[in-house]
Each structure stands twice: as C-alpha cells, then as structure tokens.
Length: 345
Image (cartoon, rainbow, N blue to C red; front, side, top):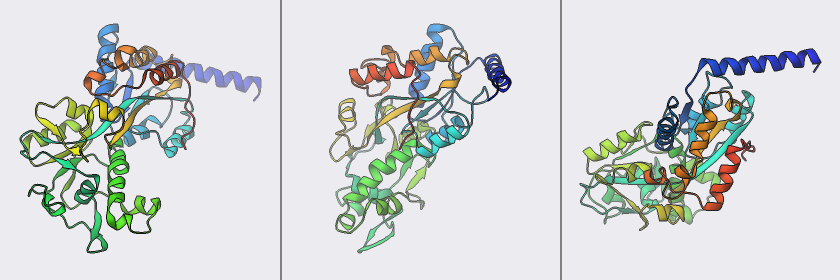
C-alpha cells in the first residue's frame, strides 16, 4: 500500500471512529434470552454507579444476536452479544467477512437448562432424558420402527408418570437454549433408547434423526421471552417449561424443578455438572468499538468485576453459577486486555 493510500485509509478509520462516538451515547447489546437478565443486571448496576446512560439490552436469541452482531463495525451495529452457547465457526466467518475481525469471548459462568412446572402440580416430576426425548421429539421408535411420535399423554411413555397431556413450552430455533437443549437433552435422550443403543447408529445419524422437535402440538415454541413461559406455567399446572436456571431461580415461589434422572438443578449440581443439562454462558465484545463507543470499556469492566462474577456476587444472586477462582482471574485478564478469540473449530 502506498503512503498516500495508507494515509487516506487511516483518515477514514479515524473519521469513522469519531462519527461513531459522536452519533451514539448508549451501548447496544443483543443476544441470548438466558444471558439477558445477567446483562441487564450489569447494565443497571453500571448506570447506577457511574451515572452514564444505561445500555440498551435486547433479547434477540443467541442465533439472532450473532447475525446482528456480525453484520459490521460502526455505530449502527451492536457492541456486545450474549450467547447461551459458544460462537459457531459459521458465525465467526460471518463476522470476519464483514470486518468484525477482533472479538473477545467471555465465558461468564454456568447455567442449568431447566425443566420446570407450576408448584400447583401435585406430581413430583422426575424424568430421564429418554422420557424427555420420547415426549418431545418429532420421531421416536414405534413397534421396532423409526416413526412419527404417537405419544400424547405422559403415562403412555411411562405408566408411573401422570395421566395428563404432554404440553411443553420451549425456545425457538434461533435460541441458543434450543441448540443446547437439542444437544444436551434430545441427543443424549435419544442415545439412551434401546432402539438406538442396540442399533448401528453413529453421531451423524443421531444428529440427523434426533434433533427435530415435534410440531403436532405437545411442544410449543414460546419465542425469545422466557418470562412468557413462566407466565404460562403459572396458569397451567400440567404444562412443562424449558428455560435457563435463572428463570426458575427467580420464580421458585410459583415454580418447581423437574428433576432429571434424580438430580435437581442447583448451584452445586450445575457447577459440578452432575445435573446433566448444564452448559456455559458467554458474551462477545466487538474490540473495534472499545475506546470509541462512550463508556463501553467501563461497562465491560463492571461485567468483569468481582462484585458481578464472584460467588456471592450480584449475578450469582440471580442464578448464575460462578467460575472457579483460577478460571475467573484468567477470564478477567483476557477480556479486560481485549484478547481476541481464536477461530472456533
């Protein structure tokens, strides 16, 4: 590149940065509905302690958030996205193709992907992942064949379960919670079935045949607002909801957990992964926006603070399961230094 071209390029970048800083004074955040309450809590704490404008936090779902986040650099694009799973290689490539080349990844803690019912339910729910799969999958074994799911009542799956209609409210395909549920619950439940264990089926077969949720009524996509699922469970004692642990934690007065294979979600069982549907949570920062969007660095510092992330911090009070001390220190150092993530595999 010639000196003139380099100078013009640097001038354009500086001008764009100045325009970005001048045209927007609020941090913009998109992404996971599960991470949303944690990010919202940090936004409120940040605004209260600094007097700065509160960041705009939108619950778009993990997949939707990644698509928006990776569209480009500049004030018209968000600064941070939350995710209830790690960034996919295809999403990283989309970011790179659109000039979002330096991204910091923050694994903020752990979450249990919880199944819950109303406290008005008289039944003490305890399901295996195989039973969850048989209730909610589009196709299941029927008389030795792989076929459309015929089950409409829980006691048709297991006579010890209640004689009530299967009705579960859960996340849509754009949600990282849906991705995690498919991987951690549906695939694992499918692998527990005798039909699959006794067959010659590999991971590719599992991915192709055990990923689809049923669309005939018993499973209802409830959008990206998990509070709506909470409200539906409060109104129907027989319905089951699927969402992050924080939504169960914050509504324990009206909801109770569905145990999975005898294990109830809690800070301890999620942290040691004995609860079988446990997962890490993330957010991603657009490093080109640091030092340009007003207060972004200060907001990230609040998110990475001990007050937020340590055990007993204000995010653990909302249901986030904290990292170990060593992992937390490494996370804080990397994110505050703006260390760019490597391409995911």
